[in-house]
Length: 117
Image (cartoon, rainbow, N blue to C red; front, side):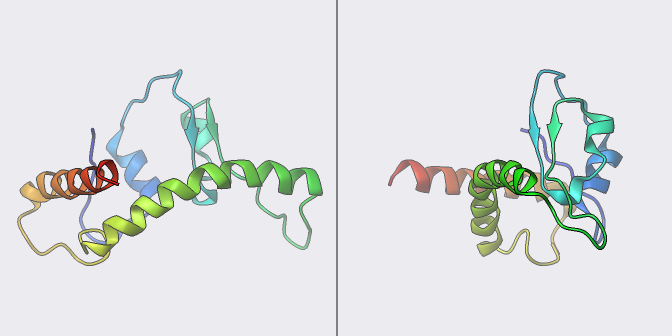
């Protein structure tokens, strides 16, 4: 598992670019519309089609956007659950060196909770 974090407020895509994380070329990435331009960094990435200015999406584009959204909802639910612990929702005021450790512990608790259901 790899965790990248930065100081202050930073968009996830900017953090991804800053981290210079090298992903396997065979790995397929599924991202939301905030990651426009990801295809320039990773060939097998998929982001939804954005509505053009003063235009509309076609029915085919809407259908194509719906499938990744169905897959991404599981990820969004996990992020919501991690925000309950407030490590992602608020400013982290403890030692930054231990952020990754605490984040991994909370993720482990979440995984344990899922496995016990």
